[in-house]
Structures are given as structure tokens and as C-alpha cells.
Image (cartoon, rainbow, N blue to C red):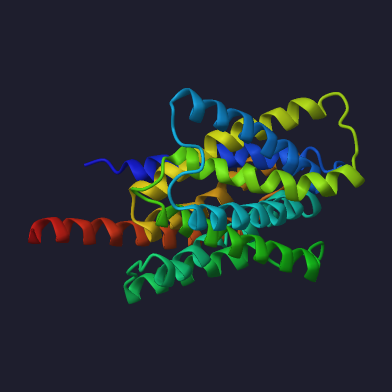
Length: 286
């Protein structure tokens, strides 16, 4: 049987990759201003569909949704910061440590069961991520700290999404992100505003569209599949980043990069195969 959760996450990863490129193309704009434009688009589109379909805007579990919104806001600010200040591939590599935090936090927040062998698979992928990063002297300690913080808050947000499974409509979960983000980044942007010019507007629009689509599929994925399984697929975003980085920013590949990609893929594939085997075993015992 086809796993829709996996398909949803693969789609989300692709659209997030396009968004990352667009964010990189507006590095001359303040990070929080870019986050503001992304949030405004999400707010308008999500609110429209919620009202159109008569879905209660504020949902049922306000504390969980509020935590999702705050964590998502902080995670996105950190993510956009790294995308704008360091090379695309390195930024995505650091940001995509979020599956590690997602899985670990999931043990305590959603009581997600993770077998011991899966920690080895995560370790393999994480080793690949650090190898992928390499010794890039363009990345400062501040950059790395903000990137890791973004990954941590993203992991917390993903757990809140999983915790809302069965009780909240995906659009309601998405809506809480711009609802809480706009006031935070809006106040900052008022005092540090820089007006976009020319093609900047197109990039900002694409950021809003691709982020909205990616967010929707990601939410569906976390609400319909095993948390550790779909979280591991986030590592594939690193491969997207290297592809787009080469095409749009002429980021070169070397033997270390290719080796790291293989190591990451091995960790991801082993984790997916383990989960598939475990699910089949459960079905057979019923």
C-alpha cells in the first residue's frame, strides 16, 4: 500500500527547495521583512479557505496550536537568516538537522517510539550532514548557532503538528503560523523597512506561494504518517539544495560532497526500510 505521508513530504521538500532559492535571491532585504511577506501571503490564503469552507479559525487545542505558531516563527526566522547569510547548500544542511530534533523531542512530546537501531540511522545521516558542511570558513559561530536554533524550533513545531493529529484541520494548523508571526516580525519591519524593487516582488510572491504549498503538504505528512519516518525524509532537502545551488548559484560539487550525499541517503533509506518492515510486521500480527 502506498504511503501518502511519504509522498506528501517529498512534495513539501521540493517546494521548500524552490522557496529557499527565492529567499537566497533577496539577500539584500532584511530577514524579518522577508518573513513578513511570506507570512502575509500565508495569512490571506489560509484565512480565505478557512472561511470559505466554514472551518473554525482558531481550532480546538489553542495551547498546542499557539506553541506550533511561536516555534514555527522562531524556526523560520533562523532558517531565513542562514539562507541569506551563508552559501545555500551549507544553510540548508544546517537547517535540515531539524529531523534529528523532531525525532528526539517526539519521544517526550508525542510519545513516539523509536527503536535503538534508528538512532544509528539518524547518526549516519547526521554524520553525512556535518561532512557535507565541511570546513566552510564563511560560516561564523553566530551563523551556526542561529541555524541550529532554527532546526531545534522547527523540530518543536513539527511535534506540535503531530500532536494536533486527528483534532485539527491542516489549514488551522498552518494558520497559527502567520497569526503569531506577523505581529512579531511586523513591529521589527516597521523600524527597519527596505522597499523591494523590480523583480524582488516576484521572488517574494514565489516565496509565499511555494511556502504555502510546502507547508500544506508537510502538515498532511506529519498528520498521516509515522513521525520519525517522514522526519527523516527532510534530509533529502540537502540534495535539492545542492542541485539548485549548482544551477542558480554555481556552487560546485567535489568528492567530499558526493560522499556526504551518499551517506545521508543511506541513513534515510535505512530508516524508511526499517519503518516499512516494522509496519508490515504489525499488520501481520493483527
